[in-house]
Image (cartoon, rainbow, N blue to C red; front, side, top):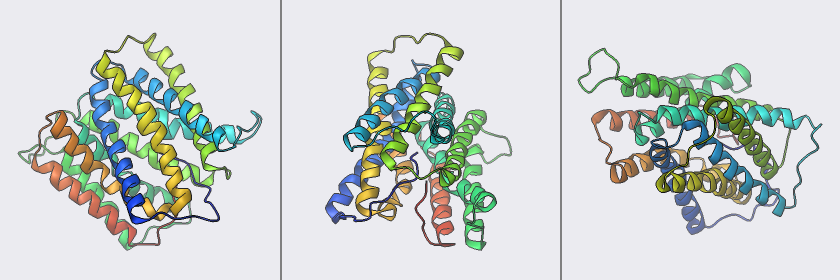
Length: 308
């Protein structure tokens, strides 16, 4: 989750090869994040997993911002309040909820649930921005909601819920947090992307560390596998991926990678089946198709705008 980009007035553009390479990188890094969380939460508490991940990522993005010539604003600047909220709703809280949920939900399934975030954003935007619902957007949301319902049904199609429905609800709430962050970020004071992302991650890391100490106590020593996953999550999907994403925004604009999120759940499902031997059933395929179609249909309802 990133903050509203401050677009470069003179973009250099990316050729098709460059765009393919960076897009493939982002899909792989974001898609594999669910796989690594699935592995890490087996031996590390969700609270400390998020605290470590946020701290590593915040440090990397702060270094990037300073190298770009940016400086953090003074503490009395009102933007610290804005990005404290964004750090909570866009990083700390959803990261913890998703990590807790993934203790019993497969990585691919989790990625599909999180993929409904754009549809939640459309509904929130109707009430809190000037982007109102229309027939196409409403149809897309209904399809996405139906896709989520499919995941809560057992394979036998009875009216009972799957046994891990509470964990899936936590992941869905995490996706809703990302949607709320999008709305808040659209109203936040204009800030250059590198420094905005650095502030958000720094404050999110501080919140995560305080919460981990208060709720869990001192962290236990992770095993080597979990430690590698934590490092890759912090430096990769939280740090380097944010820098690359912002670079693509500056070079080619938001529309250049607007469709990347369609492929993240697919990547996560493939990696989960390949590396973690997660089972496949008809619900995963049908739900993934329905949610992606819902997002695509909702985009017919209006022009694509730079989103938070």
